[in-house]
Image 1: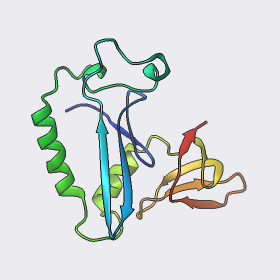
Image 2 (image 1 turned 90 degrees about the vertical axis):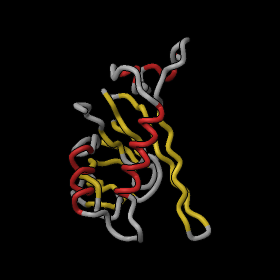
Image 3 (image 1 turned 30 degrees about the horizontal axis):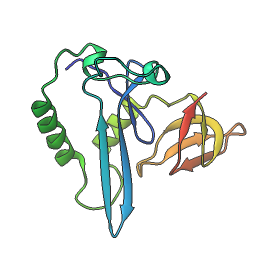
Image 4 (image 1 turned 120 degrees about the vertical axis):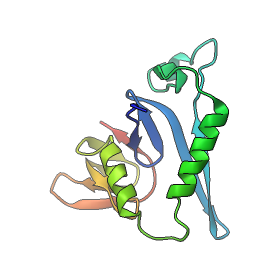
Length: 148
């Protein structure tokens, strides 16, 4: 409660400007498998220097002690609520929530698929809208994206 978690398309969560979690989806054999990585606790020795300014954990971001059982139960409950039973566009209420949490919106980015531009939001099908310098909007559907 009271924690503002942002979404960095396509698969990262942000908390205080650092990454506590990510999702990786793979498609094959008629199904999509989602892997969820969530940093709950930092190691006693801390994060390696290369990650310390980019990564965090729930407990490391000042959330207090986190019960793994309670967290797993809540995560599974939320996934059950939001994962569609069949393919299609993102439901409007969930899309609105994605838009509110989009940390890339209206920021300059560079994408692996479409090059540079300004992020303009997440499409109902999950693609990232990027507006190029001349005003052309392109849909980015895969690959990495980095804020400039």
